[in-house]
Image (cartoon, helix red, strand yellow):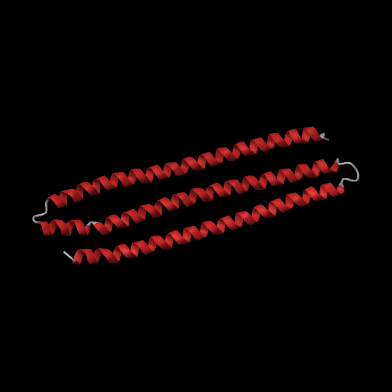
Length: 189
């Protein structure tokens, strides 16, 4: 049977190991997100350069100003659509990274709570007679803290879902507006 100081020492070491594992996991997820972001940007830069070069060649081969303006107007909609697609892809990367962070943190918190409760149960077995009220108070406080965290977690998830829904709606509205505006611009030539 362990003494209380040994139990706290073991619990502290286990908590440190768990915290280190969480930090390692979060760092890995952060690097994955950064890698995806860099990959997206490199692809966009490469594609943009190639498309800009082709567009410039097209514009320089125009025979008259009307053809030049017609060609430049025709390039507006695809450029706007690509910018919107980039924004969507970037939002997806951010959303996925955030979801992975949240999952890792929730897993960590659940495990830490389980260990704290187990340690408290073990320590409370050795509590002096007459301290049952204090033991129940601490158990109740831990339970209330867990319930509060659960509610905060649910509220945060709902807020993130609302933000994502609003962002998707805004992107769709902008896309529709860009599609509607481009034919008008082309017809004014």
